[in-house]
Structures are given as structure tokens and as C-alpha cells.
View (cartoon, protein in one colour):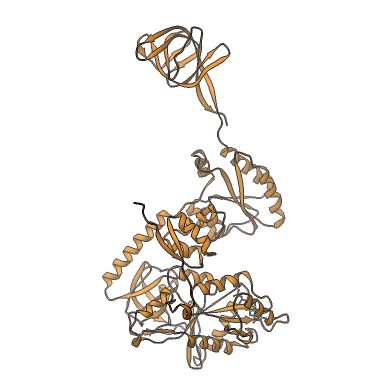
Length: 594
Ligand code: GDP
């Protein structure tokens, strides 16, 4: 019976990392599959269902779209999985908790400035002298109600969290600069928020700028199905200026209004669980991790397992460095006492017994090391030669990075001229800038070699390349680049073999051996007759048979390995025995000529 494929539910949009997580594959494996299908994607890049489905299927699963129906139409439970955490609780035990807000949007549209402005305006309120630290999140109070802001902006952080099955945010604030409008990343952010069922509040930033055009932004938003409330839609769009500190109160109000329409609740009496926002080593305090409590109440002394680390919480602090005795749902807490550093996005849970906690950690470490062992390795020139010889690689793939645009074109053109019919050369991309981690990731995934022209290698990229065996070659003259690649291509060219004649024997007599066939009685005229060589038989100018195995070589009655010129011998060949006196038997060996 054919084995049924395991069905995997795939959302309309997800990142490469999320997809990898979904099917328990390494992100590199997923990137490889994408590249095989002509799609270059980085780990944090968003792909759509159709693209994801190709990978899912190639890796042996069946992809099924998650149907995102509107609740009132279907009457179905569209609650994202993470929210079922709360759904498992007795409704009577659930109380309203502060909304957790993430800020998404295009680079330079003002996310960081907005986060700083909100914090400066609000955190210090009533907290004279409190110096806020960056711990990954902070809470503000507006009209007597708390709001938690995740202060690592950008959807990479947001999706990294979702990739681990966690969901930090209840509401997304989409930042769009009034002078720039909706950009590609803005659209990606919208897709991410939608995929996570997180409602969007729009902050139109930089409204103070002379070329600000908020109406145009609203038009572009409605093109992306976010229709502003004053345009008859349901999206709250708030103009703000972080520079002039205007609109901040309105934005907080809009966030609370949105929260009121949702059921943002948690059970403060449950065992604490939530998500790791950040983790780092501190010289004097050791390992520090910021945990966002999403359900239950976390207390100093609790035993916690976060990802593959565990420990008893020795102390907790808030973002002002003030000790916390307990952290209720939606509260970020900087904790001390975990054994290893967990990763941002890891889910944490509390345990009653230290032993259970440690057992779970051991199990997770085992899984991690297996996944690590499965991770793909990069490629050096040497590997490439080997793979080529094995016939698994037929083209040289390159990633080209140069200092200026002007160098890219001549290098690309010259390199493309090196292509031959037998051997392809593919430049995956040619861009300006230093060699980055992203370049190395792509090189690993696509088995490519990185060529740098007058550029440096970022430290992180260097480390990643070292640990994955990726070949990074740097040059400062175009001539050298071309020469080296040409050499590489030569090394990669299919080896050409030639048959070299090592001996010649002439047939004198023919012996018929019952059941075996005819044996040629010969004299070796030149070189030597060799048992493990191949043979061809020439009659006059015509070859009767070529490249046949020598089945027997005898001196008198004795089997021998070779017979030198001047000696007689008996020769038997595979698939041919129709010898005639005067036939020439040439002994050949195959030799590589390039
Ligand atoms: P991010 O990349 O989205 O985090 O953007 P930043 O917060 O770093 O802001 C990018 C640039 O825009 C910085 O130079 C900020 O000073 C500027 N900026 C941010 N908000 C405003 C604003 O409300 N008005 C003006 N005029 N400039 C702003």
C-alpha cells in the first residue's frame, strides 16, 4: 500500500524560516529547494503559499492551505493556535491583560524613533529618575491602562518569534512615512500581520515634513485593503510626528480602542508561560533573558525551561532596572538564573520539579544536535571539483560582490564569456557592498562560491563561511578574477580520456578450446601485452572490435599479468574470438588528457 503523505497546513504567507520550522527541516534545506526551483530567498524573506507548497511537496509532504475565513461568515474558530493557550483556560479565570504591540514597517520610516518617543514620553511618567534600559520590551501607561511595546522593530523579529510557534504581539502598529508612502517592506509587514491574525493600526509618521502627503498614504493603504476609518473603512490611521511629539496620545488611544474590540485576556493564576524576547551574557550578572509573560504569573524562584536552557529564576527586573517580585500576563521581565542562553522566540514554561525541567532540556538538546548535523554545508572550490568528478555538479555558481556598480558589469560580462557548452556558469547575483551573512547563507544554500572585488567580508559572514566551508575569494584586479574562474572552469571541465596503446601483439596461430572458444597464439611485437588492459583487434586498416576486456593471457599454460615484446603468448578476448593469422591485437589503457 502506498504510504500516505503527511499533510502540512501552510498559511498564505510565511517566511523561509517559518516554513522550515513547519516541516522540521533546516532553513538551508528549504532555501536549497527554492533555489532548485529558481527562487532566491533569504531566511527571513516572505514567500507565498504556492511557493511554499513546491518545497513542502518536494520534501515529501502535502501542503494544504490554511483557509482564513472571516469569522462571522464561517462561524468557525479562526483563533490562531497560540491564542488557544488562553482558550484552554476556564473562561472564569481569564482577566483582561495589557495589549502587546509590535512596530512594523519599512526601514527609515521612523520605527525606532517612534518607540523611543513613546517610551520617553510615558515610561518616566511618575517614575522620577528611572533610567530605562533596552531589554526588548517596555510598558507604558495611558489613561490608567498599560500597553506593552516590543522594542525590537521590524518583521524579522516578529516572524522569528512566530517561526518558533510563539506569538508576541496582539496588535501591530504599521509605520508608514508620510513623505515616502507604502513600500515593498510595508506590504510584507501587512502580509505578516495578516498571516498572524494580528490587527493593524497605522501610524503615518514624519507628518511634520514639508513634503508629507498623508492622503496619498491613505490611498496606497486602501490599495492594500487597509481602508482608513475617515475613508469609510475600519483601519485606524493616526498621523504622528516623533520630532514634534504630536499624535502620540492619539496613537496610544487607537491601540487601546483596537484592544477593546479584541479579547486580550490571560489567566494570572496559571503556571507562567510566554516567549523569550532577548537573551545575552552580562559580564557581572551572567546570563540574562527577557521573558514576555503571556499567561500565568512568573515569580522569582520559579523553575523555568526556555528553549534548550533551564534554571531557577534568581532575580527579575523591569525595564527601569527595578526588581520585580512577580510578572503578570503581558509583562516583560529581565530574568537571571538560566543555565544557557535561550534564543529570542523560544517559548518558556515553568516547572514544579527541577528534574522534569532538566529532562525536557536534555531532550531538546538532542533534537537540536540532530538538526544541526543535518544542516547543509557550503562548498569550497575543492569540493566543487570532487562533486563535478562525481557528476553531481555541472555548473559553477557565483555570487559577485564589488565595491562599485561600475565594476560589476565588466566582470559579469567577462565571466559570462567563459561559459562553455559543457560547463555552465551562473552568476546568482552581482551587487555592490561588503560580503554579508546573507551572501554566505545563499552560497550555502545554492552551493555557490563568493567572489569579492575590492570589498571586505563582514565578521559574521566570515564566521559563517568558516564554519560552513564556504569559499570566499577576494580580488583587486578584474584580470585575476577572470583568470581564476577560468582555471576553476578548466578544473571542472568534463575530463577527456584517450586510449593509449601500450603494446602490440600479432596473431600467429589460432587454437580452438572446447567450451571456451578460440585463443590467439601471438608474439608480442611492441611494448607489452597486459592482462588488465583493454584490447582492440585490427585487420589491415580496419578495427574489428575495440575496447574489449582481456579474458586470458598465458605464457605456455601459465596465467600471467603481462608479456613483454619478443615473447609468445596465448590471448583470449571477451566477446571476440574470430581471429585470423596476421591480426594485430593492440593493448590500450585509458588516460585522462586534461
Ligand atoms: P526605522 O529604520 O524605521 O527605525 O527609522 P528611524 O526611527 O531610524 O528613523 C529614520 C530617520 O527618520 C531618522 O533620521 C529619524 O530622525 C527620522 N524621523 C523619524 N521620525 C521622524 C518624524 O516624525 N519627523 C521627522 N522629520 N523625521 C523623523
